[in-house]
Length: 181
Image (cartoon, rainbow, N blue to C red; front, side, top):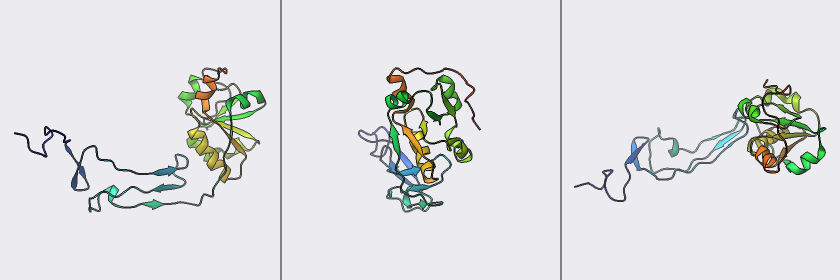
């Protein structure tokens, strides 16, 4: 006969360890984290409290860490149709990883992976610079970072997914613009 705490009991999941105490599997731990760039320039993490009082439990404390300050930055966006209308004169920086770049990229784009953006601020000196990634999220974070440094950058809304959906050409494989830094 199964007990109420056994994994075979009806309607119960096996318990999970949580800082020395057990909590029901499938229970939700909510947390929010804003991470500007992958280097953790500015990070705020405010997990909700679990019922555990243990100091070892990551969810039992409220953690706020900020390194430096980040002012509110307005991020400009451009659609892929408007970017294509500008033509080959547009300065485009692709912040995806090299393997994503090799799968296909915009012809005149230059590769500067997101992790190397802080060391490559010079690549964004030309104004305006259009920043693209796969879906627009990483390029948005890069635009926040670069905008906070006073650079004029524009996020490509929808990223390469929108570019492909619109039927625009991509160049497969590595190109001379690839500067992974």
